[in-house]
Figure 1: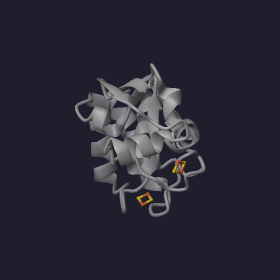
Figure 2: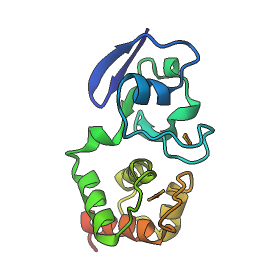
Figure 3: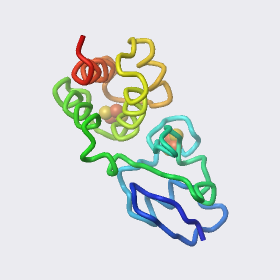
Length: 154
Ligand code: FES
Ligand code: FES
């Protein structure tokens, strides 16, 4: 039995020892915002926040989140910083197929939470584990910088 917090709610789930966190969230608990891509820790589509920090849920076993706080994009629906990020992504055309978007938003959220005015290089570093096959990254990086400007104007 794995006991953890998911988006602020306590969850108890009987997970096989070899089940990944990704499968527990997406297949068993129906959290489909967590995407399944490479399943090798390379693409970032399955990114979630564990105790506040971005992690790839495909290479973490479900039992490893015992007692931890797991946050998906759903848990930040009303969060003001995430709202700014979502709006910036929409305005800049940073979403095409959207497969990478939840993971990138979570990585960007963790960056701006801890660093209100990151440099372009810091943004690139923060999302280096998130692969986007559609947009070419320019609009994504601009969106994160735009959101930073909105939350912490000069
Ligand atoms: S599905 Fe987890 S990193 Fe690609
Ligand atoms: S928008 Fe399609 S993978 Fe990023």
